[in-house]
Image 1 (cartoon, helix red, strand yellow):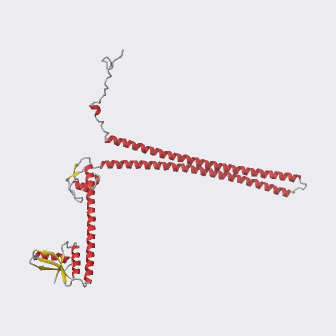
Image 2 (cartoon, rainbow, N blue to C red):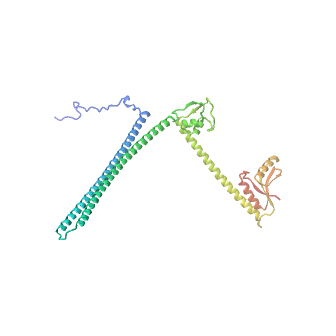
Image 3 (cartoon, rainbow, N blue to C red):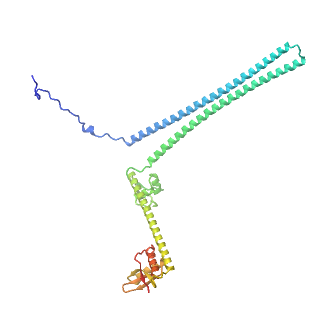
Length: 375
């Protein structure tokens, strides 16, 4: 039999079921609190500090070991030299005795007999040589003992110095760690509050003192309370201690304001310099025009009209301003008003130069001056 596809008796595959997490499982885990983070950071720093101290102690111990090895090597070398010297001295004495013995044998075989005086002199010589050899051996032993004592003392001093250095380094590290911990505690204590808080002024309080106490610029504290940094606080007065975020924002605003003031000052200086240069150039042109009147220049007297006042009082006020700036001023009534004229100048070129000078002079602050024929 051929089984048909899609037979109802054929077992159907079970649909895949996916377990979905419950709402309780989907809820985010609470973040680690600041206290736990600080504890973890503090523990890591303590581990790092302990590791550094252990490394320094290890280096100090290694230095002591190397120093002891060097001192022991020097001591062994001194002892070897002493023993070698003593051995060579003994060999020399033995060789001397052997030579004397051979000489005595030769003398015994010689037919010529020595006199008693010669024998006595030879005996004294041998005794002196033996005494010198013994003294030399004693001196060598004494020098070797001195070297051993010096080496032992040097080794002891080196150990003592290394131990003192290790203790000093450990104390220095401990003091530095304590100071750092105290500074961190003071900084945390004097940090601005997380949220704004009210403060009642006590005796001896001032903006500078409170700003230092809460670790913020005095300008920020003053700005948060709409005060001037030089304002004196009154006993019992209530002020606001800004939060950390407010301090940061006010500090940014203060920095931006300071930068704006600096930019304005630079622009004003540049403008003043430009105006001074223009005034100096206009004055130079005016001086040159006054010195030289060209043949083609229009002859006669010319003036520079700087204003047309409605009445004589206004004209006199304007004339006073130009006179205070160093100009010769005259008023002339007309049917349209009272003219305020600076001058006169001989020649139109000089009058034009005077007009340029007036228009560039910041003291009179005018740009509408124009030349007119005086007479």
